[in-house]
Length: 86
Image (cartoon, rainbow, N blue to C red; front, side, top):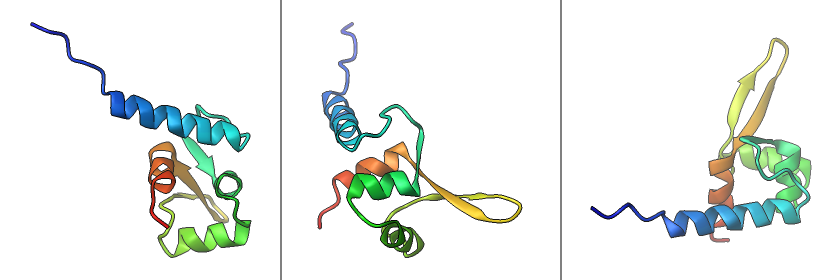
């Protein structure tokens, strides 16, 4: 029985994401990214990036703290941003 072939398309996507993150000067192996990191990655202001999170254009996970809520963008969501049509 033949061994399963690695998903070359997935490998290509992962490399593309790693290149994109590295070009922005970000750590490439993190599981989640802060809003300011995503703003840098997309070349947007922090305010615009928060606005896009709040209106759903950027998917993010809210993290509840005692006095505030912060957001993190999981790595798989970044791939969606990379390939989103304008």
